[in-house]
Amino acid sequence: MATEVSICSNALRKLGDDPITSLTDDTERARLCNSFYESSRDSCLRSHPWNFAITRATLAQLSTTPAYGFSYQYALPTDPYCLRVLEMEYQDYIFKIENLAEQGRVLLTDEGEAKIIYIARVTDPSLFDSMFVDVLTAKLAVDLAYPITNSTTLQAQMQKLFERKLSEARSLDSTEGSTDSLISTVFTDFRAP
Image (cartoon, rainbow, N blue to C red; front, side, top):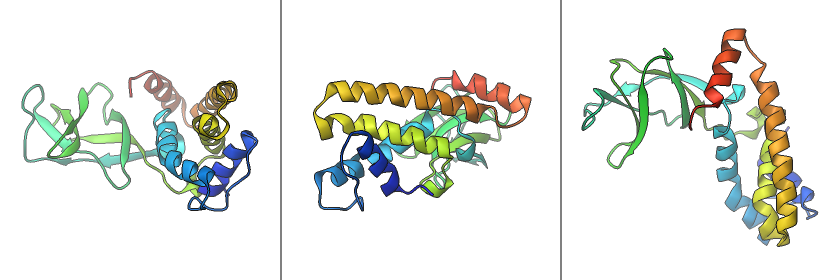
């Protein structure tokens, strides 16, 4: 079973470095892992509609309305946190995600009800798909390569590894589910995040 420490340690091993025993170890490599882990995880989660991270929610309509352009605004989920909205209940619904200083991230739409499918921030590594673990490990190796080794050559090699692992994992993850789900996932991949 994957843990934050095992994922970081495996990334360090790919760089020829020693593993860590904790993200709070009093070592530079543990501090770097601690610094990069969450942003690397969230970046990998946003990069594809991973089956293990897809969640559905009905959003709460906010009492204030958008300044212009849309009729309604809805608060995005915080538990689990919404990293990326994939679609509304009906794919032809038009929506936009914006960050409002007073309300945080909101969904704007003309629809009187907002049901969404979204990518949730999954923080428990035991819930990660095994191929996602490989992708995240490779992403961390990219992010850690230069700070750990001072080698842009090794960083470029890790980038190629990451791209290969991501492509393979996306391909396999996209084949899980019915044909309609597969078609939706393929088209969703090409939408701007």
